[in-house]
Image 1 (cartoon, rainbow, N blue to C red):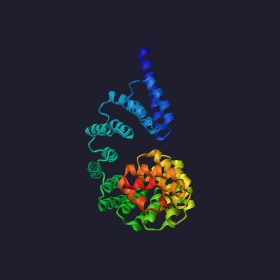
Image 2 (cartoon, one colour):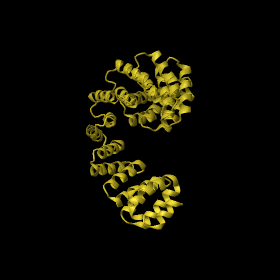
Image 3 (cartoon, rainbow, N blue to C red):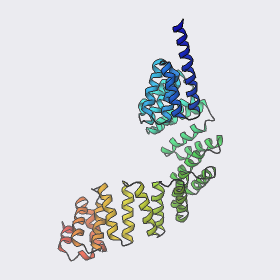
Amino acid sequence: MMQNSLKFSLSLEAEFFYQQGLRHNKAEKYEAALASLDKALLCAPNYADAWSQRGLALGSLNRHEDAIASLDRALALRPDACWVWHNRGIAQGKLGRHEQALNSFDRALEFNPSASTIWHNRGITLIDSGCYEKAIINFEKTIELRPDAYWAWYNKGTALGQLKRYEEAINCFDRAIEFDPNAVLAWNNRGITLSDWGIYEKAVLSFDRALEIEPKYAKAWYNRGVALRKLGRDEAAIASFDKAIEAQPHDFSAWYNRAIALVDLGRKEEAIASYNKAITIQPQDISAWYNQGLTLYELCHYQEAIASYTKALELQPSTPVFWYNIACCYALQRQVEQAINTLQQAIQLNPEKYRALAVNSPDFDLLRQDERFWALIAE
C-alpha cells in the first residue's frame, strides 16, 4: 500500500512540474521551463509529454542538438506523436539537415496528413535546400487545407520569385496581403520581386507600404535604397540606407551600398568612410576592399589604394585586376621597381588582357622609357 501511495505522490509531483513547465513555455520563459520539466522527469522518467515540451524549450533556446535528443526520448515512448515528429523536423532543419528534416515531416504526415502546418514547414525546408518546385507543391497542399493561410501564400510567392516566375509570385503576395493587409514580409518580398523584375517604381511603393506598417524595418529600408539606386535616385537611396543603418547599425550591405551611391554622386571622401564601416563589419568581403581601392585611386590616394587592393589580394591572390591596379598606383608614384613587379604578376595571370590594357594606359607613361616595361608587353 505504501509503495502505491509513493508512486501516486511522484505522479502528482511530476504532473505539477510538467504543468509549470508548460506555462513557462507558453510564456516564452524557456530556461524556467527547462528547470520545471527536468524536475518532472526526475519524478517520472518515462513522461513522454515532458520530454516533448523539454525539446520545444531547447529548440526555442537554439539548442537544437539537445532538442532532438529530448524529442527522440519522447518518440521512443510514443512513436505515433505527430507533433513531436514535426518539431524534430524543425530542429533538424535549423541544423541544416534538410534530408533528415524532410523524413521527420513525412513521419508526422503519416499520422496526420491533414495538418497544414506540417505541409507548410516541409515546404520551407525544401526552400532552404533550394528545391523550389517541390516547395511550391507543399505550399499548395497547405493552401488546399487552409485557403486563408497568408504565410503559405507568402512562401509560395518567395519560391516562385526564386524561379523567376515573377508575375505568379506577385499574385501570391497579393493573396497573402488580401488575407493579412499588414503582412510586412509579404509587402517587402513583393517589393523585392518587383525589383528583380525591373519594375523599380512599383517596388518602392511596396517597400513604402511595408514601412508604414513597421517604420524601423531595416530590410525594407535597405531594399528601398537598392531600388532607388536602380532608378538613379542616389540622394534618396542614401537617405534609405541611413534609415536602415539607424535601425541596424551593423548592416554591412547598407553601408556598402551607401558607399557606392556616394561615389555615384562624386562624394568620394564620404564614400571611403562608408567603405571603412562596411569593412569593419565584414573584413573578409573582397568587393568592399576592391571598391574602396578604386575610390582611393580616383582621389589620387595611391598608397592607401595599394593597401586596400593588397587586402583584396590576400583574400583572393590569383585575381589579376588587383595586381594590375596596384601596378598602376606604384607607377603613378614613380615607384618603378614595384610597378614592374606587380604588372608582371597581372600579365602572368592574364597575358592578353593586361598587356593590351598596360600598353594603352596613361598610368604607365613614366614606365615607357624602361626596357623592362616593353619586355613585359612584348613577351
